[in-house]
Image 1 (cartoon, protein in one colour):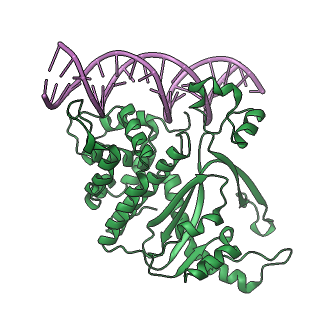
Image 2 (cartoon, chains in turn cyan, blue, purple):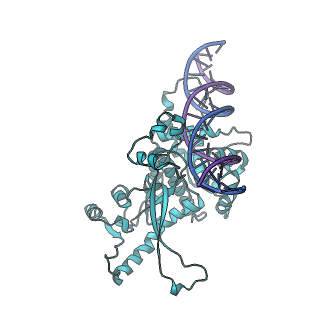
Length: 362
DNA sequence: GGCTGAAACAGTTCCGGCCA
DNA sequence: TGGCCGGAACTGTTTCAGCC
């Protein structure tokens, strides 16, 4: 698949991360990766392993490799190359100069086993428990939002698009298994609405705001962060066309000590307001502009106050997109889910490093 | 040396980007 | 717009390494 950065596109992201010392060293210092061994071993079913056979790589080592992939948006091939090439990667993984580096296929197979065992939620929950043990309780209320994670755009004919939309496999693909397995039938198109920016040199007073509709293809990362620490506490992944508002009941965490819930207008509905009222949450969801009427000044001021708080979640997405280069090149929602989940987990690792007095993740 | 299971290799197909 | 190239995801087959 294309779209992934090549071997030599890593330097910018690495330099950004390295601005204040070796970020991987800091990460290894604050995150105890051994806490993941239990869920990893369970996923790989080591307990039923009979004697004999080639010994596998250590599951924690393999998991740390997936973390590197998520942090630097590396393909499996690029990961193998970079581990062999970079001393900082080798130090992070605890490999010596003569250490054997897992093959790209081995990395792919390890990730595939985690997909099959649906382990990512257990890993996320395990780290969340570790955060709580360390004193980082979910506090101050929660901020909920979603963003589209791009995937390679499929080059399908109208006939094939219609078949996929109906949940059918196009006839010409049925006999060609190799072709079918390369086709992503779960990723979807969505439209992102935004305001056009003032052109450089133009008079801002003469500029009339224009709505832009940007088509996006891929998956959606739904997250809930705690306001006090900015850590991702709940998450889910879906196709890009999933409605954000419908996910609020799944993302709303009862573990947060604060009752406030912040979200944009996409989450405002009678159903969601009823859900928040039942759960004793305090709704800080943005108000919609009244139909064919100007936004009342009082509402606009209230929304502006909410925006100032809600912007924290946008920093998470910006970090994942621009610094980590998050993109889903795997095929199917199950694989996309682990990629997105690992990106969320990797973000929390970096955020923890910052909270503990390290480099800023933004 | 045979068995076993994981790692590694080799091949197929895809998409993004470049160029005519 | 279509052809081509390179990088990437995925899979079938072969090789490797540990145990008996």
